[in-house]
Length: 410
Length: 172
Image 1 (spheres, chains in turn brown, orange):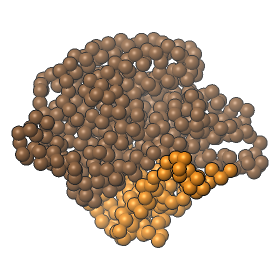
Image 2 (cartoon, each protein chain N blue to C red; image 1 turned 60 degrees about the horizontal axis):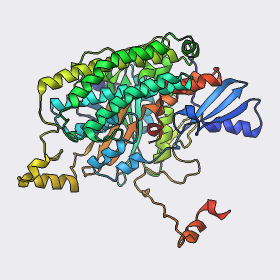
Image 3 (cartoon, rainbow over the protein chains, first blue to last red; image 1 turned 90 degrees about the horizontal axis):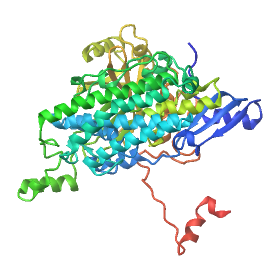
Image 4 (cartoon, chains in turn green, purple; image 1 turned 45 degrees about the horizontal axis):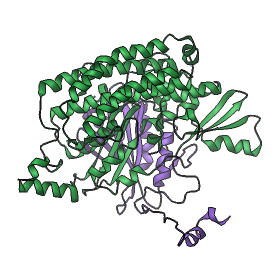
C-alpha cells in the first residue's frame, strides 16, 4: 500500500529556502481566480509537472465555532449560514438537527417535507455554481451564464420564503422561521418543470465536448480505497464508485421515504465527478417533485414544533395569550436549555458529509460546537490527485473538488 | 450491525481499556484509556467482519473546570454496515497528549492539526503537527475556554499613537 501523505506548505518551502532542491516552488493564491476563494497552494514544480501540492488554508478563519459558544442556541444558528455560503440551508439543517437530537424534539411531517424540498433546491443551486465556475475555469464561458440563470430562479424562491437570497437562516431549531407563502408551490413548480430540460442544455454543451473531455477524462483520478482513507465524501467519493450517501446511509428528515438513486462513477477522475454531480441534480429534481406533491396533499399546517419550550409561538397568539407571551419572552431573553450531553449528526450537504457535534453543559449556550467540514477534508486528497499532472490540470482539479473556503476555514 | 454486538465484542477484546460505555439517542459511545487508543482503533479498523474503514470526524472539547480537562472525540464509520461508533479519550491539562490516528487514517491529518491549533491538544506521532487555521506565529489556542473572545481597539486620531505603539507593524 502506498503511503498517503498530506504535505504542509512548510514541507515544500523549507527545503527550497535551504537550497537543497532542484525544483521550483510556486505560490498559487490566495488571490487567484481559480482557487474559488482564498485558498493558497504551495506547489513544487519540475517544469510544468506538479511534484507536490500543499494547500494552505485559514485565510478566512473567522472563529465561527468560538463565537457560537457565546450565543444562545437560536442565535448561534445565524452563524452557520456564513460557513458554506453556497449552501446556507444545508448548514442550518445540520445544526438544527444536532440540537434537536440533543433535545429530542419531534418535528411535524409538513416541516420535514419543506426542509427536504429546500435543501434539495439548495443542492441544485450549489451544483449550478460549481458547474458554472468549473466550466469557466476551463474557458467554457457560456455554461456559467446559463447556470446563473437557473440559480437566480432558485435564489428567488429562497427570497420568497425567507426574505433573504443567501443568508437565509430559514431552517430553525424546532422547525422553520416562518410559514411558506401562498405562491411558494407554484414558483417551485415552475422551476421543477424547466429544470430537466435546462440540465440537458448544460450537458449538450459539455458532456460530449472534445475540449471538455480532453481536460477532464483521466485527470486527477483517485481510487476508492484511497478516497475513503483520505476521508473524501460527497460527489468526490461517489465518483470513485463508493456509493456512500448520508441520505441513504443514515436517513434524516424522512429521506428514507423518498424515491431517488445515488449516482456513482467508476474512475474517480474529474469527468466522473462532473457526471455524478449532473446526475445528482436530476435526482434532486425528482425529490423536489415528490416533496411538492406531499406538500399539496398535506395542505396548510404547522411550520414549527408545537413544543413552546423550543420554538416561539406565532405572533397572533402573543397578543391574547399570557402563556405565549411568557414563552416568547423566555425564549428570546434566556433561551432553552438542552440536557447535559453531546450529539453528533451528519447530513449530505452539496459538498459531502457535513457533520455537527454539539456539546451541552445544561445551559442556554452551547458548550462546544464543531463542524466536520467536508470542503476541508476533501482538500487533503488534492496532493494525491495532482501529483504528476500539469499545473493547468490543477485548476480543473480544484474546481472539481468544489471547496467553499468559508466552510474550510470557518 | 447493532450497538450491543459491537459493545460486547469490544468489552471481550479490551476489558481493561474501556472506562465507560453509553448509548444515547441510539449512538454508541465508548470512553477509552488513552494508552489503549491505538490498539482499539487498529483492531476496529482491521476487524474482519465489521471494519471501521472511515474516520468520519475527529475533534476535541475543552471541559474547563473538570479533570481531566480535555476530551478528544472520534467518530468511526463502517461503510459496509453503515454503523457509527464514537470513541472518546481524555487528557489532563498538564499533559495534553493523545496518540495520533494519522498513521492509521490519513484523513485524521487536517482534523488533528485543527484540534491542536484551536485547542492545544498534542497528537503524538503526527507527521507534521503545525497550525492550520491560525497564523503560524499565533500565541495560544483560541478555542480553549480560558482564551478570551478578544477585541481590537479601533484607532482614531486621538488614540492612534497609544494603539500603534503596541502594534508590531506600526513601528517601522
